[in-house]
Amino acid sequence: MLNTLNQKVFFFINHSALEFPVLDGFMVFVSRFLVQALIILVFVWLVFLAIKSKKDGSLFLKKIGDIFIFFITLSFVWAVTELIKGLVSLPRPHQVLEDTKTLLVHGSNDSFPSLHTSFSFALAYFVYSLSKRAGLMLFGIAFIIGISRIYVGVHYPLDVIVGAFVGVFISFVIVKIFKRYTL
Image (cartoon, rainbow, N blue to C red; front, side):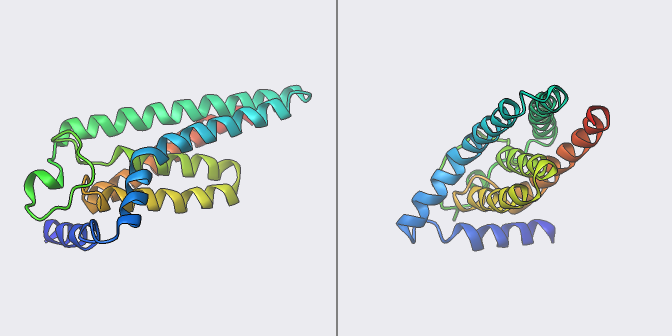
C-alpha cells in the first residue's frame, strides 16, 4: 500500500514535467543548483556575522562556533544519508517505472533518501536555530527543492520525506549538543 501511494504521488508530481517548459527549466535549476547555492549563501552569511561581531570577543567566538557547527551538521547529514543509501540501495524511479518523465539522470541504486533534501532541510533547521524568520524562509525553499527532486524524476516522495526528516533530525541534535557548550 505504501509503495502504491508513493508511486501515485510520484506520478502526480512527475507527470507535470515536459508540459510547461518554463516550469521544467525552473525545476531543473532548483534541483541541480539551489542546494549548493544555499550552502554557499549560509556560509557567507555566517562569515559576515562573525566579521560584524569582531569587536566583541565572546560574540565573535560564538559566531566562529556557529560556522563550526554548520560544517559539522553538513558532514553528519552527508555521512548518515550516504550510509542509509548504501544500506537500503533502492533504484531511482526511471529505473523501474516506465512512464517516468526524466529531466535529470542520476546514478543507480541511490534513491533513498534524497541527499539534496537532507541538506536543504538541515540548512533550514540550522538557520532557524539562529534566525526564526530566515529559517522559515529556508524551510519553504527546502520544500520546493524536495518537490523538484520528484518533478525531475530522480526521487520518490518517500525519498524526499525521509531526506527531510534525516536533515532536520541531525541538524536538531547537533545544534542542541553544540549550543549547550557554546552558550
